[in-house]
Amino acid sequence: MKQNENLNQKVFIRDAIHKNINISEPIIKELINSREFQRLRWISQFGGAQIAFPSATHTRFTHSLGVYHVLNRVFEQVEGRQLINEKDQLIVKIAGLLHDLGHGPFSHSFEKITNFNDDGNYKFNHEFYTCAIISDENTEVNQILKKYHININQIINIINKDYNKCPKYQIQLISSQLDCDRIDYLIRDCYFTGVDYGSINLEWVVSNMIIDPKLGICFNYKALWSIENFLVTRFHMYFQVYFHKGSIFFDLKLQKLFNHLRKLLQENYQWKINIEIILPILKQEVISINEYLKLNDATILKLVQDIILFETDEILLSWAKAILFNQEPYQLILENIKPNTLSQVQVLQNVIYDPTKEPIMIKVSDKKIVPLEKVSQILKNPIKEQKLYYFLTEK
Image 1 (cartoon, rainbow, N blue to C red):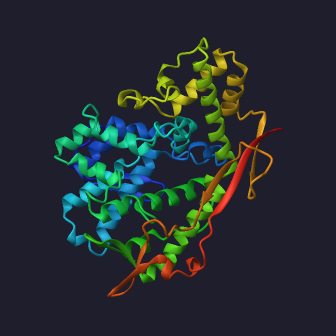
Image 2 (cartoon, helix red, strand yellow):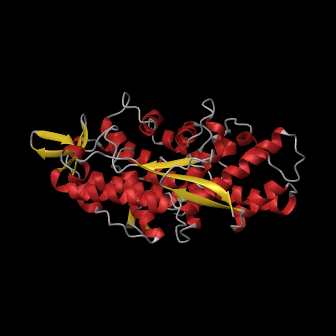
Image 3 (cartoon, rainbow, N blue to C red):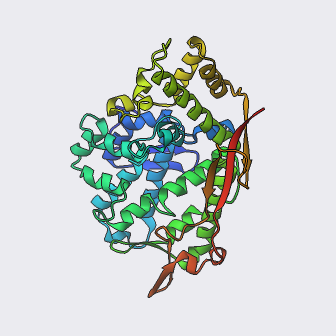
């Protein structure tokens, strides 16, 4: 979008997944043009998985636009939408648009390098920084929200999933076991990776969604098979794409590099490069919003390149080259059974559907709404969690 565009003019953004994304609200146009949202152009959606799937170079920017589009579709089609006023609909659409604003370089890969040693006193997550960016009075996003008299706390309560402070449906549309975020990223990730585990029928799922302002979201029974297909597709995507060896290996290499950077810092190593931008990460300190917004994929890649060009520590060099050139002295082993002989084994786990979390509700008659697992044939048997164990070995 152009900075000098008429804010009252309807804008269409061409998108590979949704074709035309219609932007009609002036506040949405301004938020998209803000520096903080434009930064998402340089944050890859897929992190290290693009090593295994080279065409998966889509970004948090396009995904966030996609979530906004799906929410638009919901408020145009779903039963019960007439019970929700335009201001509340706008609040949800803004929360959906901004929900990933706080992602760091390479998305979820960054959370793994910032959470050293699982320290409970220092727990990084992108939701924290999303809310911090929205709340910071110096950000353009914050100033735009105030300009249009949007209650910033309402946006933050949705992102933080605070059921005591906002209606249930608002949170469920952004974060639940079947939400607009998951719908967009699954369709988008399937498309850009080139895999085809089953198409998600967005039109049918949305048209059979029901919103109750007090009770939350449920779906007509006739959408059951499309919902099952959605869950199975997501399950397959985890084990075939998100848990792909190339993706996991990239994350491990980043972790190894930053662990060694931290070790060198503690040993008062004499740096040849400027590491100021990552010092808070190495020291496990909260990064200021101003400094955090300087971080993107290119920041980390520039750091890795500088290490290769100027540093001399052999271990540091080996991990930097492993990241940038895919040259490493190790190989990653993935197994379904936990090895008994190794101590440094990590585990990946996923389940088709988690009945311990807030369930997907199905309307089976005018007076009866039941959890999905009560009516789904694929969920009636005990739901068994699947695990993969992974570790590094020398080649």
